[in-house]
Image (cartoon, rainbow, N blue to C red; front, top):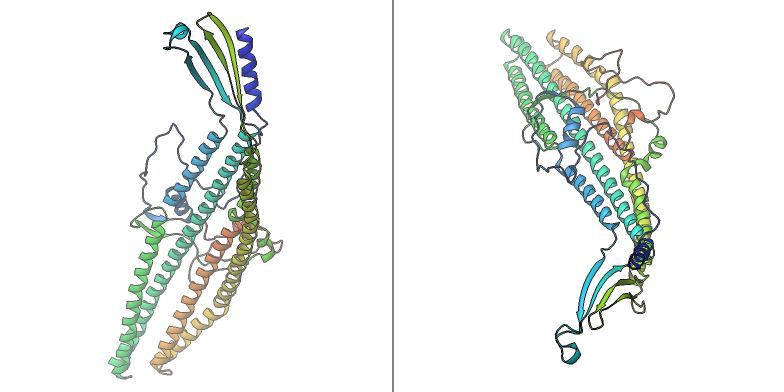
Length: 478
């Protein structure tokens, strides 16, 4: 009889606290650079280390190597990974039912008469359990699971931000390297001009004042060369800081800054905005707010507290069962405030989703405008301005050697070609930076986006002296 009672009691408990699972679907974020290894926070049984030793890159470094270092060692990204782990533990805790309680009571002892001493005691052993009704456990677990999804989306947003910032820093290093090379060529050019001027001045063909002018121009180019060297070192330090490094130990960043390709249409890019984690997260956010409303409605249902056990009456040496039931009466508190709050937060999430989409479209429009403008500028400089400036300088310099043009014309032509090449590098820097920003907004590599025309578009050739492989298309990501 006792066994039958306990069996029935346990069955009631199981049926009461169990409910159908409401787990949310596991998200599969589509992110940029998903083939690059990232830091994963250790599990419960793994030893945690605050920092791991890694070897700073030396010699030549590639963009992929820089991205790997940043995604694995960036402290901000590592912190986000721990938040995901914490949310997973929170979801585990939310699905656990309340613990049963066991109590022991002794009554009617230490009195007078028939209850003197322990002769008339009643001993009761009770097993009590709070019964969550309305599917509270499953609803609470679903809310926590959606909170985990939100943490994953936030992690992916941070991941793409680190990826983009590292790419932008790498591009700046490439541009700084090219500017430094350009300054070196300018110094060589100024030295060549100074040598010719000095030779003619010693021969008495021109005034010594022109020699001093060429010397001033040469000194100015050397000063700019030193400034360019410092800017290059500074850009290397910024890149190194992306993987929590201190001093750059690599010598050169490899990559072809001069490789550009025609851009896809704005419509093809705009269609991919939904892949951006900052946009995609709002679907989970709204689902989480709706799940919270269901949970708060379930919380309005009072949870009974049932108990059952065994009682021994010492005076008659009898045994008996004890059953109890306690139910809160929802008169004053029906959880109406929490339900109203959850509904209003859902409305807020819908508005925030629209705001996020508006901001993303605005950012894409700006990035696309910069991309289009920088591409057009780079193509004009490469195809028209630079060839004409180089041709003009060669003609003027030869004419100066033959006495047809004054030194001022040579210096002006020299400055013009330098400014054109510098403008070309800046246009390429803006182009590749705009590509990185567009890829951040669409969460998709630009080369994977469907081109606005079916045939393969060849990359622009470099006419500034860098080598190109005609059989293989190179780009900055290689």
